[in-house]
Image 1: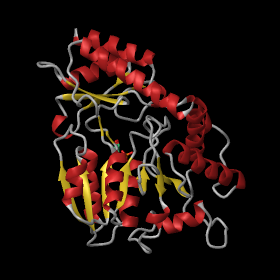
Image 2 (image 1 turned 90 degrees about the horizontal axis):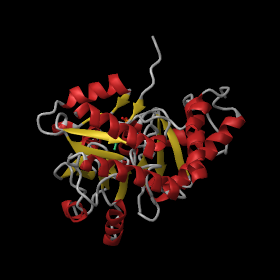
Image 3 (image 1 turned 60 degrees about the vertical axis):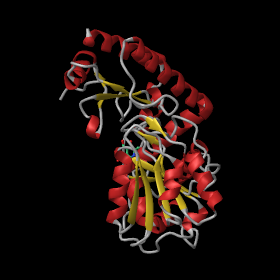
Length: 365
Ligand code: PLP
């Protein structure tokens, strides 16, 4: 099969950082090699930096972003626990599904798709849930929610509720300050603003949450206690085999995080902001209407209404076949009426914006 090259300007995966690609081709290390364990430790340290946390337990889980979601619920929810989920798009929906499969009594706080999470409504949903879960950057709609305000509100209520945040689309694309935001558990994915292929789910847990984890969760593969014996060492300090860590992927993540931190997270966030703004202005100049509301609009993922009378799928097909550009369809009820355009990681650049806008202008005639 011929190798084709695409500009991946959809909701993910995005094109990788060159450093992440180069690391995949480096000589493979064994998962218990001291050199690899050093690299794994340093990956945890780099994740702590981009996430704004000092959580000891910060590690890449083997699997895509959804593995992070599964690990969060299976390790921190006991059957019958009340879990409040803010639902403002597809991934909030998925959280409800996953939480209920592990026996949670899910209290949904439904929002119109496209709205940010309403903190007061989440607080009012239950006086003392075991856990509150929300998506920081809803990829299905292109909307950012204020996780810091949610965390502050939960803490000032003085209860013991844990806060879980989905950071799949926000990590390494905008400022995140998990500790200041009082987030106890967070997960992410590698294939978006981190600029690494899909395959790992960065994960972090506060000490407070760790003390309340499920001791024997109904999963072996995602048991954080067992994985912890490998990643942070067991009681004796040794690193025990749990499963074969995907060493090449960890090396790739490590390299991408190095690239991001060399540039500096504030500069990376600004690059995403500038690219997203330029795209959104350009789309508006073409007469297109943006889907997400001003003020809560993501920069790394722009949702835009498909113009009246235009076939959404035809345009996407033409962009792909004639220009090698992938953009995304809408999600859920907006599958045919919205496009989603990602400028993530190495694609958060003005040259990508100009290329996309030029191609779209031609295709739309
Ligand atoms: N959460 C959000 C916000 C996402 O955007 C995605 C994927 O797009 C996921 C969770 C699930 O991640 P994955 O598809 O890598 O399993």
